[in-house]
Length: 333
Image (cartoon, rainbow, N blue to C red; front, side, top):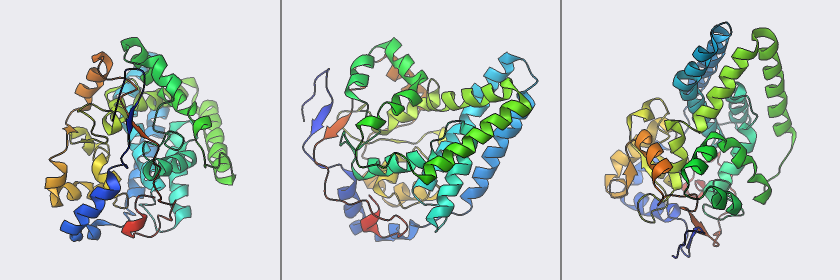
Protein backbone atom coordinates (compact mmCIF):
# COMPACT_ATOMS: atom_id res chain seq x y z
CA UNK A 1 0.00 0.00 0.00
CA UNK A 2 1.12 3.55 -0.69
CA UNK A 3 -0.40 6.81 0.49
CA UNK A 4 0.05 10.52 0.01
CA UNK A 5 -1.68 13.51 1.56
CA UNK A 6 -3.47 14.14 -1.71
CA UNK A 7 -4.83 10.69 -2.36
CA UNK A 8 -6.46 7.69 -0.76
CA UNK A 9 -4.54 4.65 0.47
CA UNK A 10 -4.50 2.11 -2.36
CA UNK A 11 -4.57 -1.59 -1.58
CA UNK A 12 -3.81 -4.55 -3.82
CA UNK A 13 -5.48 -6.97 -1.41
CA UNK A 14 -9.17 -7.94 -1.24
CA UNK A 15 -11.36 -6.44 1.46
CA UNK A 16 -10.70 -8.21 4.79
CA UNK A 17 -14.13 -9.49 5.79
CA UNK A 18 -14.83 -12.44 3.52
CA UNK A 19 -11.57 -14.12 4.46
CA UNK A 20 -12.02 -13.48 8.17
CA UNK A 21 -15.57 -14.84 8.07
CA UNK A 22 -14.36 -18.15 6.65
CA UNK A 23 -11.56 -18.39 9.20
CA UNK A 24 -13.85 -17.60 12.13
CA UNK A 25 -16.41 -20.18 11.02
CA UNK A 26 -13.76 -22.87 10.84
CA UNK A 27 -12.91 -22.27 14.49
CA UNK A 28 -16.38 -21.26 15.72
CA UNK A 29 -19.06 -22.92 13.56
CA UNK A 30 -21.58 -22.24 16.34
CA UNK A 31 -21.75 -18.61 15.15
CA UNK A 32 -24.05 -19.87 12.40
CA UNK A 33 -26.71 -20.24 15.09
CA UNK A 34 -26.79 -16.44 15.47
CA UNK A 35 -27.95 -15.91 11.88
CA UNK A 36 -31.62 -15.07 11.53
CA UNK A 37 -34.33 -12.42 11.89
CA UNK A 38 -35.52 -10.33 14.81
CA UNK A 39 -39.19 -9.43 14.16
CA UNK A 40 -39.40 -7.64 17.53
CA UNK A 41 -37.29 -4.86 15.99
CA UNK A 42 -40.49 -3.50 14.46
CA UNK A 43 -41.62 -2.43 17.93
CA UNK A 44 -38.45 -0.36 18.32
CA UNK A 45 -39.20 1.29 14.98
CA UNK A 46 -42.77 2.13 15.99
CA UNK A 47 -41.61 3.48 19.37
CA UNK A 48 -38.93 5.69 17.83
CA UNK A 49 -41.27 7.08 15.17
CA UNK A 50 -43.87 7.90 17.84
CA UNK A 51 -41.19 9.47 20.05
CA UNK A 52 -40.22 11.89 17.28
CA UNK A 53 -43.80 12.68 16.31
CA UNK A 54 -44.87 13.34 19.89
CA UNK A 55 -41.75 15.44 20.38
CA UNK A 56 -42.51 17.50 17.29
CA UNK A 57 -46.07 18.09 18.50
CA UNK A 58 -45.04 19.11 22.02
CA UNK A 59 -42.31 21.45 20.76
CA UNK A 60 -44.54 23.19 18.23
CA UNK A 61 -45.55 25.85 20.78
CA UNK A 62 -42.28 26.20 22.74
CA UNK A 63 -39.44 28.75 22.33
CA UNK A 64 -36.96 28.25 19.51
CA UNK A 65 -34.04 27.61 21.88
CA UNK A 66 -35.97 24.70 23.39
CA UNK A 67 -36.62 23.30 19.89
CA UNK A 68 -32.92 23.45 19.01
CA UNK A 69 -31.77 22.00 22.33
CA UNK A 70 -34.30 19.18 22.12
CA UNK A 71 -33.17 18.32 18.60
CA UNK A 72 -29.51 18.12 19.69
CA UNK A 73 -30.01 16.34 23.01
CA UNK A 74 -32.96 14.03 22.20
CA UNK A 75 -34.03 14.06 18.58
CA UNK A 76 -30.55 13.33 17.24
CA UNK A 77 -30.35 10.10 19.23
CA UNK A 78 -33.81 8.98 18.10
CA UNK A 79 -33.04 9.72 14.44
CA UNK A 80 -29.67 7.99 14.67
CA UNK A 81 -31.44 4.93 16.06
CA UNK A 82 -33.93 5.10 13.19
CA UNK A 83 -31.03 5.08 10.73
CA UNK A 84 -29.86 1.87 12.41
CA UNK A 85 -33.37 0.45 12.02
CA UNK A 86 -33.33 1.32 8.30
CA UNK A 87 -29.96 -0.42 8.15
CA UNK A 88 -31.53 -3.54 9.67
CA UNK A 89 -34.31 -3.38 7.08
CA UNK A 90 -31.80 -3.05 4.25
CA UNK A 91 -30.22 -6.35 5.31
CA UNK A 92 -33.67 -7.97 5.68
CA UNK A 93 -33.02 -8.74 9.33
CA UNK A 94 -36.54 -8.10 10.66
CA UNK A 95 -38.96 -10.15 8.56
CA UNK A 96 -38.57 -13.01 6.08
CA UNK A 97 -40.45 -11.05 3.43
CA UNK A 98 -38.30 -8.56 1.47
CA UNK A 99 -41.42 -6.41 0.94
CA UNK A 100 -42.17 -6.28 4.69
CA UNK A 101 -38.61 -5.22 5.41
CA UNK A 102 -38.69 -2.50 2.77
CA UNK A 103 -42.04 -1.16 3.98
CA UNK A 104 -40.66 -1.14 7.54
CA UNK A 105 -37.71 0.91 6.32
CA UNK A 106 -40.01 3.40 4.62
CA UNK A 107 -42.01 3.71 7.86
CA UNK A 108 -38.81 4.24 9.89
CA UNK A 109 -37.84 6.95 7.40
CA UNK A 110 -40.89 9.11 8.17
CA UNK A 111 -39.44 11.36 10.93
CA UNK A 112 -36.14 11.69 9.02
CA UNK A 113 -37.83 14.14 6.58
CA UNK A 114 -35.69 13.25 3.57
CA UNK A 115 -36.60 10.09 1.59
CA UNK A 116 -33.58 7.81 1.83
CA UNK A 117 -34.57 4.34 3.02
CA UNK A 118 -34.93 2.58 -0.34
CA UNK A 119 -31.89 4.27 -1.88
CA UNK A 120 -29.80 3.52 1.19
CA UNK A 121 -30.61 -0.17 0.88
CA UNK A 122 -29.21 -0.34 -2.63
CA UNK A 123 -26.08 1.69 -2.03
CA UNK A 124 -25.36 0.01 1.29
CA UNK A 125 -25.52 -3.52 -0.09
CA UNK A 126 -23.01 -2.46 -2.75
CA UNK A 127 -20.79 -1.12 0.04
CA UNK A 128 -20.73 -4.59 1.59
CA UNK A 129 -20.14 -6.38 -1.70
CA UNK A 130 -17.47 -4.04 -3.04
CA UNK A 131 -15.92 -2.28 -0.05
CA UNK A 132 -13.25 0.17 -1.19
CA UNK A 133 -14.09 0.05 -4.91
CA UNK A 134 -14.54 3.72 -5.67
CA UNK A 135 -17.09 3.45 -8.47
CA UNK A 136 -19.31 1.11 -6.41
CA UNK A 137 -18.84 2.00 -2.74
CA UNK A 138 -20.95 5.05 -1.82
CA UNK A 139 -19.36 5.22 1.63
CA UNK A 140 -16.15 6.55 0.06
CA UNK A 141 -15.79 10.32 -0.46
CA UNK A 142 -15.44 11.76 -3.94
CA UNK A 143 -11.91 12.79 -4.87
CA UNK A 144 -12.95 16.45 -5.09
CA UNK A 145 -14.75 16.12 -1.74
CA UNK A 146 -11.65 14.74 -0.01
CA UNK A 147 -9.43 17.36 -1.65
CA UNK A 148 -11.77 20.20 -0.67
CA UNK A 149 -12.09 19.18 2.99
CA UNK A 150 -8.69 17.49 3.41
CA UNK A 151 -7.42 17.79 7.02
CA UNK A 152 -8.61 21.36 7.73
CA UNK A 153 -10.65 21.99 10.88
CA UNK A 154 -13.16 24.31 9.26
CA UNK A 155 -13.50 21.94 6.30
CA UNK A 156 -14.29 19.03 8.61
CA UNK A 157 -16.88 21.13 10.45
CA UNK A 158 -18.59 21.98 7.17
CA UNK A 159 -18.38 18.37 6.02
CA UNK A 160 -20.05 17.04 9.18
CA UNK A 161 -22.65 19.81 9.20
CA UNK A 162 -23.70 19.10 5.61
CA UNK A 163 -22.82 15.41 5.47
CA UNK A 164 -26.11 14.33 3.83
CA UNK A 165 -25.51 16.72 0.92
CA UNK A 166 -21.99 15.42 0.36
CA UNK A 167 -23.46 11.92 0.20
CA UNK A 168 -25.90 13.07 -2.49
CA UNK A 169 -23.00 14.32 -4.62
CA UNK A 170 -21.56 10.78 -4.65
CA UNK A 171 -24.54 9.26 -6.46
CA UNK A 172 -23.42 10.26 -9.96
CA UNK A 173 -20.13 8.41 -9.40
CA UNK A 174 -21.71 5.11 -8.50
CA UNK A 175 -22.44 2.48 -11.10
CA UNK A 176 -24.71 -0.54 -11.45
CA UNK A 177 -27.48 0.89 -9.25
CA UNK A 178 -30.97 1.67 -10.52
CA UNK A 179 -31.52 5.33 -9.57
CA UNK A 180 -35.33 5.36 -9.67
CA UNK A 181 -38.27 2.96 -9.63
CA UNK A 182 -41.66 2.47 -7.98
CA UNK A 183 -40.19 1.81 -4.53
CA UNK A 184 -38.19 5.03 -4.56
CA UNK A 185 -41.28 6.87 -5.80
CA UNK A 186 -43.27 5.45 -2.87
CA UNK A 187 -40.55 6.54 -0.45
CA UNK A 188 -40.75 10.08 -1.84
CA UNK A 189 -44.55 10.21 -1.82
CA UNK A 190 -44.74 9.13 1.83
CA UNK A 191 -42.22 11.78 2.86
CA UNK A 192 -43.86 14.57 0.86
CA UNK A 193 -47.26 13.80 2.38
CA UNK A 194 -45.77 13.60 5.87
CA UNK A 195 -43.77 16.84 5.63
CA UNK A 196 -46.78 18.67 4.22
CA UNK A 197 -49.03 17.33 6.96
CA UNK A 198 -46.63 18.18 9.78
CA UNK A 199 -46.17 21.72 8.49
CA UNK A 200 -49.89 22.35 8.06
CA UNK A 201 -51.00 20.78 11.34
CA UNK A 202 -48.21 21.67 13.77
CA UNK A 203 -46.35 24.55 12.14
CA UNK A 204 -42.72 25.42 11.43
CA UNK A 205 -41.24 24.61 14.85
CA UNK A 206 -42.32 20.98 14.61
CA UNK A 207 -40.77 20.73 11.16
CA UNK A 208 -37.54 22.47 12.22
CA UNK A 209 -37.22 20.09 15.18
CA UNK A 210 -37.34 17.12 12.82
CA UNK A 211 -34.97 18.69 10.29
CA UNK A 212 -32.41 19.60 12.96
CA UNK A 213 -32.72 16.17 14.57
CA UNK A 214 -31.88 14.66 11.19
CA UNK A 215 -28.81 16.81 10.57
CA UNK A 216 -27.48 16.47 14.12
CA UNK A 217 -27.93 12.69 14.03
CA UNK A 218 -25.54 12.28 11.10
CA UNK A 219 -23.33 15.35 11.35
CA UNK A 220 -21.91 17.93 13.74
CA UNK A 221 -22.61 15.90 16.85
CA UNK A 222 -20.69 13.15 18.71
CA UNK A 223 -23.00 10.69 16.91
CA UNK A 224 -21.47 11.90 13.66
CA UNK A 225 -18.20 10.27 14.72
CA UNK A 226 -19.79 6.96 13.79
CA UNK A 227 -19.06 7.68 10.12
CA UNK A 228 -15.39 8.22 11.03
CA UNK A 229 -15.27 5.19 13.32
CA UNK A 230 -16.41 2.68 10.74
CA UNK A 231 -13.76 2.92 8.01
CA UNK A 232 -11.43 5.91 8.43
CA UNK A 233 -7.81 5.03 9.10
CA UNK A 234 -7.23 6.04 12.71
CA UNK A 235 -4.86 3.20 13.71
CA UNK A 236 -2.46 2.41 10.90
CA UNK A 237 -4.03 0.84 7.82
CA UNK A 238 -6.70 -1.27 9.49
CA UNK A 239 -9.70 -0.90 7.21
CA UNK A 240 -12.74 -1.37 9.49
CA UNK A 241 -13.21 -0.48 13.17
CA UNK A 242 -15.74 -1.30 15.84
CA UNK A 243 -16.96 0.93 18.66
CA UNK A 244 -17.54 -0.67 22.07
CA UNK A 245 -18.78 2.34 24.02
CA UNK A 246 -21.87 3.03 26.09
CA UNK A 247 -23.80 4.66 23.24
CA UNK A 248 -24.30 1.25 21.67
CA UNK A 249 -27.16 0.91 24.15
CA UNK A 250 -29.10 3.70 22.39
CA UNK A 251 -27.73 2.91 18.93
CA UNK A 252 -28.77 -0.74 18.73
CA UNK A 253 -25.18 -2.06 18.73
CA UNK A 254 -24.33 -0.36 15.45
CA UNK A 255 -20.82 0.15 16.80
CA UNK A 256 -20.07 -3.55 16.28
CA UNK A 257 -18.98 -2.80 12.75
CA UNK A 258 -16.29 -5.41 12.16
CA UNK A 259 -18.70 -7.99 13.47
CA UNK A 260 -21.45 -6.72 11.18
CA UNK A 261 -19.25 -6.73 8.08
CA UNK A 262 -18.06 -10.23 8.89
CA UNK A 263 -21.61 -11.49 9.48
CA UNK A 264 -24.20 -9.20 7.83
CA UNK A 265 -26.97 -11.79 8.31
CA UNK A 266 -26.88 -11.49 12.10
CA UNK A 267 -29.34 -8.95 13.60
CA UNK A 268 -28.34 -6.08 15.89
CA UNK A 269 -29.22 -7.78 19.20
CA UNK A 270 -26.84 -10.70 18.53
CA UNK A 271 -23.81 -8.74 17.33
CA UNK A 272 -22.11 -8.65 20.78
CA UNK A 273 -22.35 -12.45 20.87
CA UNK A 274 -20.04 -12.64 17.84
CA UNK A 275 -17.24 -10.94 19.74
CA UNK A 276 -17.99 -12.99 22.86
CA UNK A 277 -17.80 -16.20 20.86
CA UNK A 278 -14.63 -15.32 18.94
CA UNK A 279 -12.79 -12.75 21.13
CA UNK A 280 -9.40 -13.60 19.69
CA UNK A 281 -10.42 -12.27 16.30
CA UNK A 282 -11.87 -8.96 17.54
CA UNK A 283 -9.92 -8.01 20.64
CA UNK A 284 -6.75 -8.16 18.54
CA UNK A 285 -8.12 -5.44 16.24
CA UNK A 286 -7.95 -1.72 17.04
CA UNK A 287 -11.31 -0.38 18.17
CA UNK A 288 -12.89 2.79 19.59
CA UNK A 289 -14.49 3.25 23.00
CA UNK A 290 -15.73 6.85 22.69
CA UNK A 291 -17.52 8.55 19.82
CA UNK A 292 -17.12 11.89 21.60
CA UNK A 293 -13.35 11.52 21.83
CA UNK A 294 -13.17 10.44 18.19
CA UNK A 295 -15.39 13.37 17.17
CA UNK A 296 -12.91 15.91 18.55
CA UNK A 297 -9.90 13.95 17.37
CA UNK A 298 -11.26 13.98 13.83
CA UNK A 299 -11.83 17.74 13.95
CA UNK A 300 -8.42 18.68 15.34
CA UNK A 301 -6.04 15.91 14.24
CA UNK A 302 -4.46 16.87 10.92
CA UNK A 303 -3.24 13.31 10.46
CA UNK A 304 -6.85 12.30 9.77
CA UNK A 305 -8.38 13.61 6.56
CA UNK A 306 -11.00 12.46 4.09
CA UNK A 307 -8.14 10.78 2.23
CA UNK A 308 -7.71 8.45 5.23
CA UNK A 309 -9.55 5.62 3.49
CA UNK A 310 -8.59 2.36 1.79
CA UNK A 311 -9.53 2.05 -1.87
CA UNK A 312 -8.94 -0.81 -4.30
CA UNK A 313 -9.40 -1.72 -7.93
CA UNK A 314 -10.07 -5.38 -7.20
CA UNK A 315 -13.84 -5.68 -7.01
CA UNK A 316 -13.75 -9.42 -6.40
CA UNK A 317 -16.10 -11.95 -7.93
CA UNK A 318 -19.01 -11.90 -5.50
CA UNK A 319 -22.42 -11.33 -7.12
CA UNK A 320 -25.23 -9.30 -5.61
CA UNK A 321 -27.01 -12.21 -3.93
CA UNK A 322 -30.43 -12.58 -2.36
CA UNK A 323 -30.03 -11.88 1.34
CA UNK A 324 -33.28 -13.55 2.22
CA UNK A 325 -31.37 -16.83 2.52
CA UNK A 326 -29.08 -17.05 5.55
CA UNK A 327 -26.38 -19.03 3.80
CA UNK A 328 -22.88 -17.91 4.71
CA UNK A 329 -21.90 -17.68 1.08
CA UNK A 330 -24.47 -14.93 0.50
CA UNK A 331 -23.70 -12.84 3.55
CA UNK A 332 -21.31 -10.45 1.87
CA UNK A 333 -23.61 -9.67 -1.02
